[in-house]
Image (tube, rainbow, N blue to C red; front, side, top):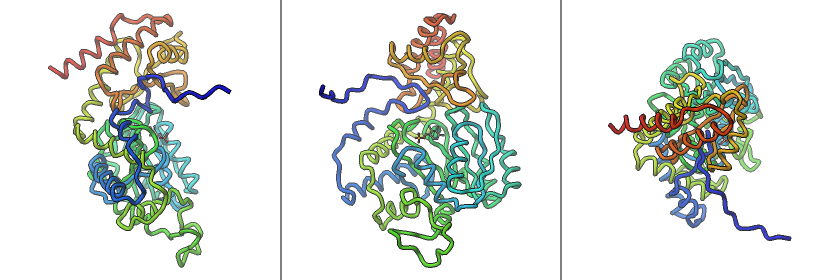
Amino acid sequence: MTAIPPLDPPARLLMGPGPISAYPSVLRAMSAPLVGQYDPFMTGAMSDTQELYRQVWATENDATLLVDGTSRAGIEAALVSLVRPGDRVLVPVFGRFGHLLAEIAERALAEVHRIEVEWGQVVPVSLIEEAILRVKPHVLALVQGDTSTTMNQPLDEVGAICERHGVLFYTDATASLGGNPFEADAWGVDAATAGLQKCLGGPSGSAPITLSDRAVEAIRSRKRIEAGIREEGDESASDFVRSNYFDLGMILDYWGPRRLNHHTEATSMLYAARECARVLLAEGRDAVIERHRLSGAAMLAGVEGLGLTVFGDVAHKMHNVVAVEIPDGVPGDAARGALLDDFGIEIGTSFGPLHGRVWRIGTMGYNARKDTVLTTLAALEAVLRRFGASVPAGGGVEAASEVYSGAAG
Ligand SMILES: *Cc1c(COP(=O)(O)O)cnc(C)c1O
């Protein structure tokens, strides 16, 4: 039997829609020594992380913490904890992740109502309000940035509408947080979740979450069940959260002052999440958003400079990802393969109605930089040419460089 060699991943530049190459300091933080679950250092690191993420989310919510697991662990925790079986949940769908929210709400036995718009558009706020009046949901579940279409749903007016109609407002900000504006308190968001592997510049595996007092109240109003012991008056079996791991009531008690034992906090992921927020805030929240805006604009100009067509309503595009139509005659998967094999650069394929039609190119977190944008455009030009597309020589790099020098001047 041949010995399995030590782990030695290839050097890759991850320029897809996520995951992305992590900040070097995040990888360093993950290799820091482990401490015990209730070591004062550990509980201190947890409190620091809460404080850092309050600033990332722009909130004063006490209930700001991490759910252990990838982004959908956060989504699932929010929905199973906020939604009782039979509750109505309204899900506006403008891409793949809207369908995911609807599916998770269905698994939580909600009565799910979807409204859908064509991929490449966002949902008009008037349509959301009209549906709220018609459906009278307990929860509105709305994606902010949907990487499947690159669209960034405007949220700033949605919270006020929800509050007027007594609806809890949950949003999945996984793809958008850190690279696009997000204002949990100013926008009246009741629950929001994210992951690290997009604009926050870390690996997947930790899901930051923030909950308003209203959301915490809704979660606390559910009956408790712990180690098989049920609270009095729980005859209605539907009242306790049907998951132990994702029961936010228990997770809140674990992160709160009582530090009641629940799961064992994933120490290395906590270090990663803490460092993602720390580097973001050290650079400055607005500065990081501006860096994403600038590199996103440069990548957009660059692909257009190569003669490619951008998919979707560009006015509502997220800063951190662009979808480009694959030119006629170019084999999409073979071209992506050549980018990876010959240049070590990964870009993304697409799902559903866009499969085989567009590539998705990300500029997020650590990789929202001039050198990564120009390198990717130069490599893309070479690959397009190799597969027979006629592209303007240097057109991508030149157009992107102009965006950067415009910003510098
Ligand atoms: C990328 C993404 C996710 C990813 O979920 P994981 O569980 O981390 O794979 C979730 N929601 C949205 C909107 C995303 O863009």
